[in-house]
Amino acid sequence: MIDLSFSPAETGGADRGPNATMDFATADLYDLTYEAFRGPYTFRLDGADFSGTGPVLDIALGLFGAARELADAKRARYSAAGGAGEYRFERRGDTVRIRQERGGTGTVAYAELAEAARAFLAEVVRQLCARFPDLRRNPEIRRLRTAAAAGPA
Image (cartoon, rainbow, N blue to C red; front, side, top):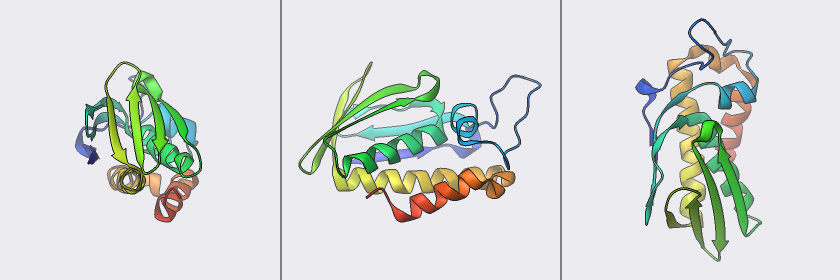
């Protein structure tokens, strides 16, 4: 069992101080993942709850990337931006063990992780584009939409 979700209504735009702005149509992937879209997210699986507040696009992309890497590797690692977590993934057969540096350890079937990560990335992109319409014109966001549609494998 894996539960990945976030609250679009509680997810802010740019995180560059009170007077700073970000052009979502032209921002690069670094800015979009590290300096924007902080909010509460749910990340639960059998044996662990890694939920918190952090950069939701970065988390969605990181989990998607880890699932993609685990298609061919036994291990993957992901460090969420802004100190939102350091995750280690270990695949043994069809089971993936996920451990957070300062948290618990949980397990999930690889196929379930891969599909949940793909669906979460697609949903984060869809919801953020609805909330921040300029994102629809961003080439990085278009690439993420295509990647999520193709899936991690």
